[in-house]
Structures are given as structure tokens and as C-alpha cells.
Amino acid sequence: MESKESLDLFNLNRLLIGEDIPYTFLAEVLLRTTVMFFLVLVVLRLSGKRGIKQLSVFELAIIISLGSAAGDPMFYEDVALLPAILVFVIVISLYKLITFLTGRFEKVEKFVEGKPVKLVENGKILYKSFRKESLAYDELFSQLRQQSVSHLGQVECAYLETSGDLSVFYYPDDKVIPGLPILPDIYDLPVKEFEKGEVYSCKHCGDSKLDIQSFRPCEICGENEWLVASRKIRLT
Image 1 (cartoon, rainbow, N blue to C red):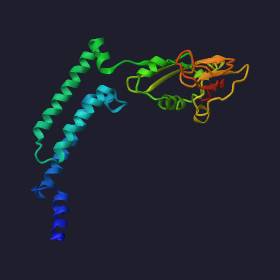
Image 2 (image 1 turned 90 degrees about the vertical axis):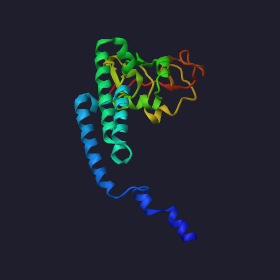
Image 3 (image 1 turned 90 degrees about the horizontal axis):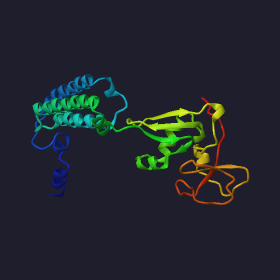
Image 4 (image 1 turned 180 degrees about the vertical axis):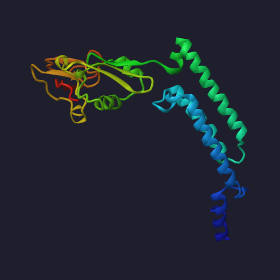
């Protein structure tokens, strides 16, 4: 009895193909997958080259919708092809309609695509704007480091684009100002003592102060962690 119950628990046929589904359905899966695969290719081709680059929230919603519509009919016996194809037609029609409206109406564009947000200005993090975005310090600093930035004083301004990319504009070498170091081995070690004549940067917003004599909350963000500001020029 025990061995029979074990076989029922690990029914090989159910595990491989499912209950009451003949193995001939695998040939149908081949046809379904081929149809939906080429349909996805055609739809992405019609959506334009932008669809294969960095995606906005709107485009990501389109891809998720198409992915769901394409995936289920490939291997679910009770999901037919025609309803899935209809979903494709509706989704791509909505894509074309919304794209048309965003090109004609600025409010629609802002609602669908959002707008770029300035995160860094004059070597400092715009703390209130930064807090509104779902972005961590590590993510911001990582994107800056990938563009050869070692401290915020090298950055005149930086914008978070609707695609999630960071557009950075730099100070010329002769105008670089003291700024918050963003290299991990420096950033993770805030100062414990202050020295006269040194410039210090707030670890959380990058605001820089000269001759801090004792620990005190930052006037901009209210935090109380400081690093020695860096003056290095940007090396590319």
C-alpha cells in the first residue's frame, strides 16, 4: 500500500505533461509556440526600434501585457490562440493610440512617461527630490561612478531620466569644487574628528562646510554624518 501511495504522489505522467493530457499535445505546443513567437517579433518590429532599448514604465507595461498574452497559449491546453491574438491586437492598438496622444498633449505625456528629475545640482544632492524617487544612495553613486565620477564636486547637475538612466553634466577641471566622495572605501568611513581648515561634506546630501568644529546636524537634511570633501578632478 505504501509503495502504491508513493507512486500516486510522484505520478510521472502527471509530472511530465499533466492530468488527462495526451502526449500528442506536445506537437500542438510546438505549433502554438512558433505562432506566438513570430507574433511577438512582428509586434516588437511594429512598435519601433525604441522598444528594444531602455524601457520606460509605459513600455514595460506593454511588454508585460504582451508577454502574458504570448506565454499562456504556448503550453496551456485550455487557452486558445485566437483570444491571445486578439489581446495582441488590443494591446498594440492601445500602444499606438497612447503614443499618438503623448505626441499631441503634454499632460498625457507627463502622466504616461513621467518627466526627468534633477537629483544633483552644484555638487549637492537635491535632498527633497531624491527622497521622492525610489532610488537608493548606492544606485545613484553606482551610476555616477560608471561615468568616472569620484565625488559630487565634479558634477554640475544630474538628471534621472524617465528610462531610469542618469544624465550627468560635469564641471570643467578648473571649476571642480570640494564634494562628497562616493567611492565605497571612503564613503563607508565617516569622520570621527574634525580638523581646522578642512572642508567636510554631509554623507546624505553632499552639503559642504568649512571648519566644522564639532558634530552637528546638517542644515539641509538634518543628518549628522560627515566625510572629508574631495577636490580631485575627474579622470576619463
